[in-house]
Length: 563
Image (cartoon, rainbow, N blue to C red):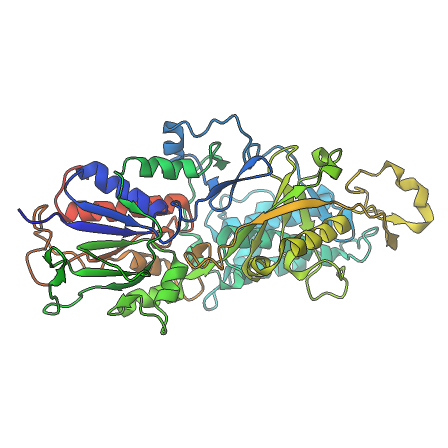
């Protein structure tokens, strides 16, 4: 009987472990299976950790809709939705946010709501959720603004569309009374800053550092599951542990960083390789950084799009021979960005105050504005929020995207603490008119809530942090970023191209042979990961689906049961 087909999965993240789990549980002894991981842990961009006594997520955080999500289904099956230990966003809807504009002005709903609703409706239009027939109330005029913004010239970006929608809104807003009592803020500047706050949230959702690089057409292809978005009580890593738990010892190999993959795309180029125990005719040869090699009949590549971009650049030889142009062009065109999370722990000196620390949403002047507070660092000005990870927690969280996220990775803990403390103290100051100095005694501890100052001084309220923890996905060589998006110039077809195996399968293989009947050996390199799923890219469930897809592709190729 011929040797078992050897399948090597590169990467022990969600997609890789899902594929391994499916292949092993469906066949047991049919394949020789290995999962090689360059890092010292499994999980990939899922990394549950602990900070300040609380369970936190350094990477993937949310189950994006519980209706139909395989992640939610697994979490329920393994009782991962119950925990005695507090965890990140355990009460995601607990506190209403306080929206504070630079200068310490708390914004009331009458100021924020129109712009927030406009932004939501514009995004709903882009995602195909807002239609002319379905629009009611404010949605009617917002649909008109969106239709006007989507004028149909050339390749439209989400960022360009949003700003044209805002311009259309301004064109229709005539004779608005100018603001009073908001310091240097005019109505238009404040509306634009509130709009920018929502844009910056969208940057973290999509990983597009600049929304003008995010393709408009592809937004309507992206799919969300229905139902609430929740976090996992026992941590996202519990899903990873469950997937890996069925694999026998030795299947997962840590510290095995791949440097090169040799494959055989053409007939007549394949030569058996001499090994210590004889000759091996497997068509794929995997080279590792320690100089060792491994042969395989099939390799499932689950590395991030960032690693693929670096590995297919002109100066890199990750694939020998190079991948075909349809694959490398898709890799090049698709977007891949950086999103980082920053956790800060409040000092014990704030013990009486930490319970009152607000769920803070921040409205800033742009980095280049002459009106800006000069001591607030540029890298925090496109950050939307800073809030406790749950009510009364002493741990705060903030999200960063794009060049600001990359800058954060270069800063020391001391620089981060100084920058955030300066920013928070500035926002949570108590502005008051010089002439009514004595009327500020009833101000809130963290924010004045009145917006009554034109020429204001401030009573600074210093907030102290004792330690910080941040993710560094951009500079980590095993990831080189966070997740993918469809960039302008790309399309959903590129995500489909990412999923294409090399070379394509031929009919007639069997569980015993694994050779496809001679000629070019099929399915030498397969691809999985969030960036290979057309409608669920950027998500853990997209990665999960892609791992199942490639496992099933191989099971079908060998006509095995359980597909």
